[in-house]
Amino acid sequence: MSSKEEITLIGAGLVGSLMSIYLGQRGYQVNVYEKLPDIRKTTIPAGRSINLALANRGIRALEQVGIIDKVNELLIPMKGRMLHDVNGELTLQPYGRKPEEVIYSVSRAGLVSLLRDEAESTGNVTFCFEQGLTDIDPDNKTFSIKHTQTNNIQTLDYDILLGADGAGSQTRQVLEKLGVDGFSSELLEHSYKELTIPAGTADAPFQIEKEALHIWPRGGYMLIALPNLDGSFTVTLFMPNEGPVSFEAFKSKEEVEAFFKEQFSDVLELIPSLAQDYFNNPTGILGTVRSKNWSYKDILLFGDASHAIVPFHGQGMNCGFEDCSELHRLLNQYSDDWSPVMQAFADARKDNANAIADMALENYIEMRDSVRDPKFQLKKQIAFKLEELYPTTFIPRYSMVMFHHMPYAEAYRRGKVQNDILNQLTENSDSIEHIDWDQARQLVEQNLEPFSKEFLH
Image (cartoon, rainbow, N blue to C red; front, side):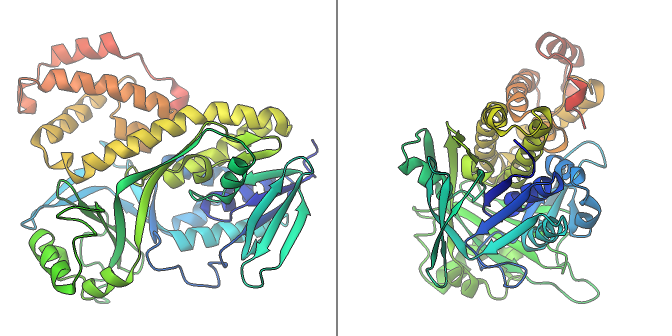
């Protein structure tokens, strides 16, 4: 297939916009259809994730399209988790052993606006906003788009149709109606609500530590906060839908404020509009989308459209950006012949998507509960020491996911082996001084093979 043929891309979010840059740079004419208004001209809706965590997988994709220098201006480094206990005591848990092992808070609106500007600057990408997909006819290679304001419907031709329209993907829903099976959506019994710690004074805009992801872990629920460039923090409350402590349980301003005073007293005084924001901002659902079939004829799903995950590993955007990078690699490998590319892409990404979905679910328990456990903290210390001693063989699972490029499925597999090693080493020890390092060496050598260099950052 000639690279001059047109690509129809459904969804102009982060992943769709980045993919349009790759394709525009390859010489494709790309038409992107997005049901929402252009965020460059309208404000982001309340309750939608205002900032996100960018890590190495996402950074590599941004480097490949040559825009990382511009993205850097939007980033705030986060060196670790700042834990807030019920009494307001603080503990910083570094993400990695090395100074460069940090993740970055980035504005969703700022990043997606930059990606769209860069896509348009290729001269090959056209965005069509407030245009929602309604139907696809794969046999005649046509699709129908409805304008969200006028309700005008157009039916247009496509050569290749890419669905990057998020967890609620209309592209995926149309494929289901056409009889394509193997899709599942699993809702978590917890939801989320966004709040804001406003910026402080001109002299001290950040009212809490700037370079950290703040967590208030409380077992069955938690609060987190990520920094914004203006000094504010986006705060997210994750809580069960039902039960004594739940979104269902709190009905009044007094109940919400009493709950925060009891559990999050140090943040209560930082959110003057707490009750108002709590009741005004929507409650967002959390879920996992899995797909057995990512492609059908000349239609391909990727990003959240085929593998949405819960946000507790900070990998939703990074995984989607890695999709774009992998699709780009396969287009190179197959000389832009989309037929083998689509199947190869699904084969390369499916197991990895399922692995990061599982790890994200596990990380929710870690963030809201396990981080408080002394045994968890001991294992983290030991893991960092083992990485120092055996850097080509033992890397903590979190670091494998966030700071390296090995497939998610491999990180998940090795993580289980490494966790068994840590369990054995800490079975009769409650301090790193009591660890048997000869036993540690034997366990590492017996159970782990050295990493392939291509996977290391």
